[in-house]
Amino acid sequence: MCTAATYQTKDFYFGRTLDYEFSYGDEIVVTPRKFPLDFCHMGKCDAHYGMIGMAHVADGYPLYYDAVNEKGVGMAGLNFVGNAVYQKVEEGRENVAQYELIPWVLGQCANLQEVRKLLAKMNLVGTPFGDFPAAQLHWIIADASGAITLECTKDGLQVYDNPAGVLTNNPPFPMQMFQLNNYAGLSPKQPEHRFSGQIPFTSYSRGMGAMGLPGDLSSESRFARVAFVKCNSVSGDSEKESVSQFFHILGSVDQQRGCCEVAEGKYEITIYTSCCNASKGIYYYTTYDNHQISAVDMHRTDLDSKTLSCYKPVTEEQIFCQN
Ligand SMILES: C[C@H](CCC(=O)NCCS(=O)(=O)O)[C@H]1CC[C@H]2[C@@H]3[C@H](O)C[C@@H]4C[C@H](O)CC[C@]4(C)[C@H]3C[C@H](O)[C@]12C
Image (tube, rainbow, N blue to C red; front, top):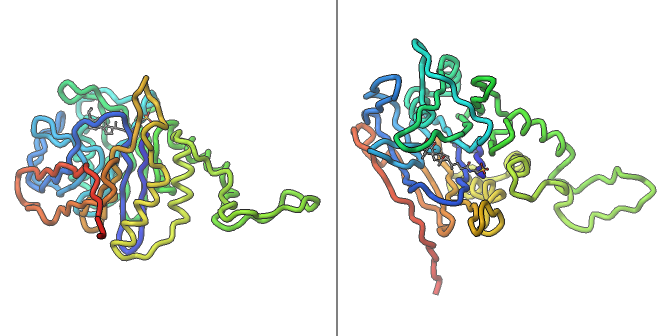
């Protein structure tokens, strides 16, 4: 399971949890403006926007899971297993392989409006990268103006407005949004007792306005939970306050080892949580065992170079000893 969310304070923030039972070997990767992006069906691109995100680098190519570009557009791919159906390569179309979708979009688009135009003419194909099978994903793409969800199903390529600014996994996005109707009565305030005038109700605990918010790890429940937390989130707008609050938002859907068994003795966990300041190009992250926030700033690398800058995540717990 995975969860992605957006958050706006003074700057625009975009991030995700990456939940899985193993790691592909992830690195924080800056793709600078002149890194040659060799698209599978669309030729080479030697000049594009710079981007930073989490990726597995294979044969020198950044296979991104999530990233933001220097213009403040963010994008993340989340599992959509059983529903993702990619299109066939068509002569004369803009055929883009699923593994190169993030660099394709972030390399060219300065805002969500440009993303929509690009997606309208794109043909998303299932061409695999080397020996890797095609990942069955759907994507959230966002900037400070809003968010959209991109899904490629048996019905074709769909682009949905995403007013919640969140995404998890199955079922398809319209069903996730529809399920939110079930929680319309939830509130951060204490409940009004409208059940019946005949019964003397007592609000015996704080937090009872959100009673009914699902606590399990299914994607539908995480969708509702993170949407509630994000939409009711209150924080200061400084960098530290915003980043801290963002990690609290995604902390509401954190997956602890042992609670989600995917095979005998194998558990899905939150391998990492990211929070990008999309406005400033800074990639903050924590990992399952390292709760200290680490950061990589794309503007502290040479964005005009032709080579990737890769940073291995700091995965060991950092404990600040006070005495
Ligand atoms: C496993 C990751 C998604 C995690 C997730 O959504 N978990 C939910 C589990 S569940 O459905 O709810 O059970 C996805 C996100 C991005 C994916 C990677 C990126 O798409 C880049 C390449 C694409 C290649 O085709 C496959 C390897 C790969 C390197 C992908 C491996 C894997 O599928 C990743 C890492």
